[in-house]
Amino acid sequence: MLETKQFDVLIVGSGAAGLSLALQLPDSLSIGLLSKAGVHSGSTAWAQGGMAAVLHERDTVDSHVNDTLQAGAGLCHEDAVRFTVEQSTDVVNWLVDQGVDFDLRNDQPDDEFQEFHLTMEGGHSIRRILHAADQTGSAISKALNQRIAKCENVEILTDKCVVDLISDGNRVQGAYVLNTTTGYVETIGAATVALATGGASKAYLYTSNPDGATGDGIALAWRAGCRVANLEFNQFHPTCLYDPKARTFLLTEALRGEGATLHLPNGERFMPRFDPRAELAPRDIVARAIDYEMKRLGLDCVYLDVTHKSREEIEAHFPTVQARCQALGIDMAVERIPVVPAAHYTCGGVIVDQFGATDLPGLYVIGETACTGLHGANRMASNSLLECFVYALSAAKHIKNNRLQQKYNNLPRWDDSRVRVSDEAIVIKHSWQALRRLMWDYVGIVRTNRRLKRAANHLKVLEQEVDDYYSSFTITKELLELRNLTLVSRLMVECARERKESRGLHYNSDYPDTLKASADSVLVPVNSRSQLTVLPRYSR
Ligand code: FAD
Ligand code: SIN
Image 1 (cartoon, rainbow, N blue to C red):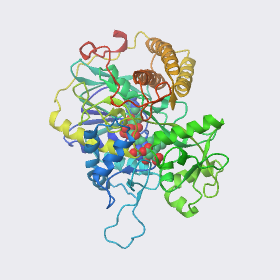
Image 2: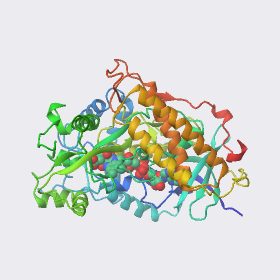
Image 3: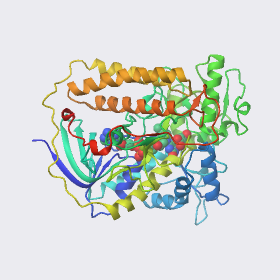
Image 4: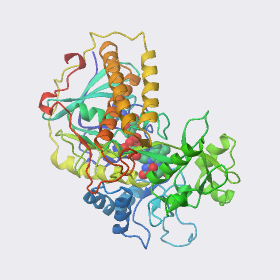
């Protein structure tokens, strides 16, 4: 007999967005908090630079709003930007109440009211980034998980991967969930479901993200009939550590905020040639400049120079980066660090309103999975964590006031009577490699119509192969992730092909200009929700 569960609210994802939503909901509600791996498995625990907030005595909401709009290249929704920024100080107070220890200024140790140490990142016109050394995400994840562990109304379910949402076409009713330890698919009923599953940067061969960034929430919501938008804007972080034998590792933008400069192998500092803000221009500009120089000169990487900082300063502010460099034999206090851009953040996602509500009643999407309108065509550094907390709070209020007290006890069980255990898992491995290589080569920092068309053709074949496999064999986490990421990659390419201009992170050399009028690229599922009762796969 397979386990079935019921919750008032099912939250999928234990990163900044999922944890803060669970903590903000009333404790009278029963909450299931799912993670497909451990509780620290998402990008949140890896965040380095920090969280943007209006805290500096000379900073204003208008200034943060304007910087965000400018970085977003004319595509941000100003109401969403203002809504987010206006709540930044409340978010900071809430996080401090939860026990997050942000770094304080050390030049005023005797003051009764110490101020936070604020660092600088690209696109910001003032020091605005609150941080815990270069381990901000880990500090947040630890503090929030400690709080959650004390909440009796929250059941934490790790190693549980959502396969698909259950819906009658009018409302979400729960989800099918693969227990990755036993291999069984469980049915969980819930009249309110929140997807907080992070981004989709694993679509690319080189990424700063953890392995689970496979766009699951975007795929789940799309298959349940929700619109998605702006998926062509996948952000490439300009500075990831280059070592052909090691996993890609982020070198925080705060390094450049604290004066680090970018150089060619001959020592030339090249960013001033591309933008007056040089290394502190928004990410799309810096990543494209690096890509241009690497292609022009046939380079494997460029170099980041932090040697103006003393060893003590590096140790205090950048211990994580320093440790990783040291492990690869690089002493960043005296030598330049080899760097390349890598896929980092999914700016588009599932279309939501100010409460995180989607097209499907009862279904909310928050955090990196959502498209709130905040980031436009290019997210400004350190606005992502802020968005997670602001929209989690807003969704919590909305859920509290609008939730349906319905129980779903008779949901159809998952049926895998017509599939067998795979004897050709090599197909999965091969498809993973093909997908990530294809996206890197054809849908990268600079695109062309021909490359996008080629990507679309290849993805069609790949998607068909993955669907066939899914219909024939019992599921595994790797298969579910591949299925989701293949779909999301196809949606990324569709968005990219729809945009007949270059804007922000999307640069197409066949349309190098930016159109006067800006518009989101919105994709609508072919099947309307009323036709989309998501039943076990073999009922299709
Ligand atoms: P995540 O933290 O990614 O969590 C996703 C959760 O969903 C995980 O628990 C995962 O297990 C779960 N999940 C996914 N799919 C399923 C499924 N099918 N079933 C069940 N569970 C599932 N942003 C900033 O603002 N400042 C920074 O300094 C910063 N630094 C960064 C550094 C790195 C290296 C990276 C990768 C990102 C950084 N970002 C930063 C971006 C930011 O960290 C993320 O956008 C943000 O943490 C996303 O939070 P989230 O809650 O939406 O998702
Ligand atoms: C970084 O530390 O450079 C990452 C910041 C971000 O992605 O916002």
